[in-house]
Image 1 (spheres, helix red, strand yellow):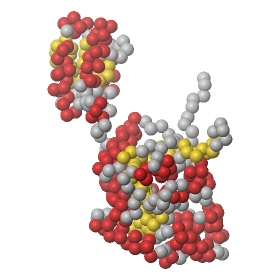
Image 2 (cartoon, helix red, strand yellow; image 1 turned 30 degrees about the vertical axis):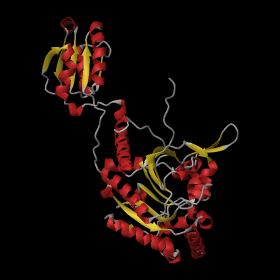
Image 3 (cartoon, one colour; image 1 turned 90 degrees about the horizontal axis):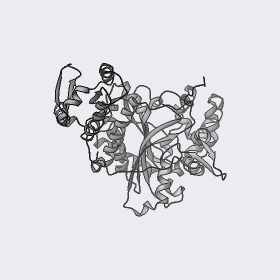
Image 4 (cartoon, helix red, strand yellow; image 1 turned 180 degrees about the horizontal axis):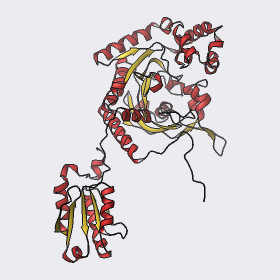
Amino acid sequence: MSETFQTPKGVHDILPLDHEFHTYLKKVVRHRARQAGFRRISTPIFEYTELFKRSIGDDSDIVSKEMYTFEDRKGRSLTLKPEGTAGVVRSYIQNGMNQWPQPVLLYYFEPHFRYDRPQKGRYRQFWQFGFEIIGESDPALDAQCIQLANKINEDLGVDGVFKLQLNTIGTPEARKKYMQVLQDYYVGKERSLCDNCKARLSKNPLRLLDCKEEDCKILAEIAPPMRDYLDKESLAYHEELKEYLDELEIEYEENPKLVRGLDYYTKTVFEFWDKENGSQNAIGGGGRYDDLVELLGGQSTPAVGYSAGVERIIANMKREKVRVPSKDDLHVFVAQLGNEAKKKCLPLIEELREVGIKTMGALGKGSINVQLRLANKFKVDYAVLIGITEVREGTAIIRNMEKGVQETVKMEKVTERLIELIGDKNLDKYSPGELLYS
């Protein structure tokens, strides 16, 4: 016997029950995005590696350790996208979106890839949704981006689990001065740092502030505060943002150690942290990236965005016992006995499906009782039974599977009767045009 295959480490199948959560989450995101004027974008699963090196930063953990990078047949370096913003900004520049009405509001819901250590809620292929507002700098836009994320958390029933963490990291110029202050502070303390932080100290000292190792956290707590070295404009911007959040009645916690792991952020940064487990169970975050468009070859263009991990949100929905509506449950199972009955079943099944009755049947050659047991396994509300007698008389039996009662109706009346029994509001019906707005 051949050896059976397993998924590679760090990836997993999305089985039907989890797809119910995915579908629900995607519909909530799409609904809130449309309300706010966002339009969906999809960027390629892989991009030129240099895009991520330039945007995320050579010294970031993502670029230095976590990217899936490969060469194509012409020796060009390509990378499976580890995050969504860089590709969206590349598309903004490439497709001349600076000529569109500004700001440009885009959202995505896509898979991403990082060679990360697999653990609960963290995978090597993972789904994220995100929002990008490109083309305008205004703390009111930052507030609206945060409000959109917060509203989605409420819709999904996980808002009570998480609290907004908020900080400002200022301009790159101010941050550069502060990084020198940090490096000076850590002189002589290197032996207390974890191996990762020892490497970060010379390359990206800001990341030492959000290390999760206990000794590193203690040193970070007593490090010189960033706020003392930030520019006045960024501090004023931050104060205005907080006023808008207060007006929106969005609770937040000032977190001066929050820096995010990507080099392109400026001014506003924020994350949603678990109220009990902190950053270990963060579900999403974002911030302002006013220099990224120019860094990637476009004109100077301010922007702000947010992204969230789908698997992490679903794990917390399950933790909170959130029930999602399912449209996958079947209404009717059509059972038949004999080839002539099966011939009658096939057009009936098609007719039922066309009016929105979710139907399966006309399977195999088992007895009616065997098929009814199968119908019970699929938890249908009704079964339609067609045998030799029903074919001869032009009738069918409709059986209520819960109550065990049944009635005989003319074949041409089966669909009409099932609509009455199931209820028009429970049917899964649409026209192709309506799909665009569902």
